[in-house]
Length: 199
Image (tube, rainbow, N blue to C red; front, side, top):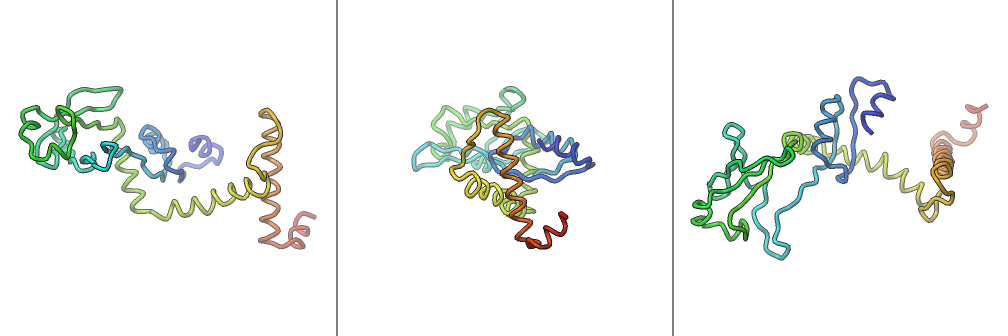
């Protein structure tokens, strides 16, 4: 979608924002490759038992790119076990795991495993970008979510299209957007100035 917008706007670079539902490492990397700066909150799973107890999260393991290994909170190493669709799976040694004083806080399995996403570096760059510019999501909420909420509330009423099939939905959406834009133009410019500009 961002690539299509960049081509349509005929821009060499583009800045886009999206909510956490669009968090995807492959898409982060694709945006970077296309000179698109994306701001999307990374949505990562948290390691938990499902109860009140919570195990060490993956963020508490330090990755060493030189040795391609993780170091756990107890200081033990997790080495590469296998590749799976580009993702890298690391495991702790059985000997380290059996003598580990923190294993009750790590996992109930025979040993601890960690998965490194195929585009982990893109996720990490996104996290840095989001921390450096937290205001981007505020801009998105005010620019995108406000019009969308208004369209659903006072134009569509019940939030559903009344016309059927894609052609009807497109026509209804076009009318709703036009009505919203006219209302905003009247609020900003005033009815008299708007009519003068249109005449």
